[in-house]
Each structure stands twice: as C-alpha cells, then as structure tokens.
Length: 149
Image (cartoon, rainbow, N blue to C red; front, side):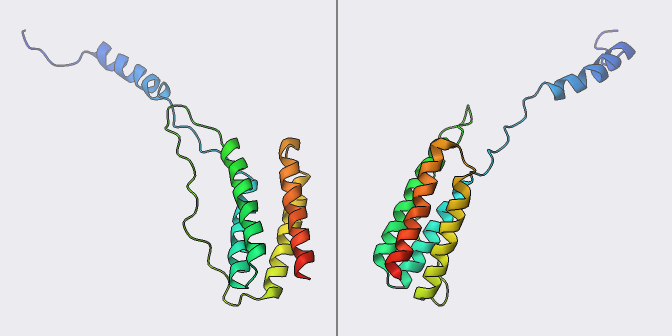
C-alpha cells in the first residue's frame, strides 16, 4: 500500500507520550523584576517638586528634583538586566506630576514631612550601600522643612 497515511497505534502512543515533554522543555518568559523600594521615593520626590513649583518655592523644587534624579539613577543601576533583551533605559519624565488643586505652603510642608518619614523608615531596611543615599534624602527633606519654617 503506497501512500498509507494512517497512524499506527504505536505512533499515536509515542506522540501522546512525548507531547508533555515538548511543553515542559520550552523556556518560560522571565518574570518581571520586583518593584524597587526606591521607586516610591522617586515618585514622591517628583510630586513634591511639582507641588513646590506650584507653591512658589523654586529652591525646594530644584532640591526635590535632584533627589528624584539621584534615586532614579540608583533604581536604574540596580534593576536586573534580562538576558536576550535590549536595554531600555527608563526615560526621564517629560512632564511633572500634576500638583494638587490647592498648592499651599502648608501642603508642601506636609508633603516634605511625609517624604522625610518615608525615606527615614526605608533607610533602616535597605542594604547598606543604599542606606546613605536614602538617609541623605531624608536629611535633605528635613533641611528643606527647616528652610520653609
């Protein structure tokens, strides 16, 4: 019989037995890296800079922007690179976060107090090579608060 295309029982059993191996041998895509704890500080610093700009405190805005830039540089440095993918650096935000509807000096002071506490609390939990950066952000917020008082 030429051109026989029917599968034998042995062929069907072999296909059924090896199908799970084909699925198990494929490499799953890598899991996304966990969110860096410093990312929350970056977002807070950018929001504080927008608030300070709206409240008429340009020096505070410049200082919080520098905090955000330094923290973002550390986040980018520590982000694991996935093999086989092209590096895609985190782009700098093109616009600042929208400030609150009522940007007052009191709102800025409250935001800086929250940022100081957030950074101070985080400084005790991050590895020592990051603790200095985080603690200096907390101290920077404290000095900004002192300047606003």
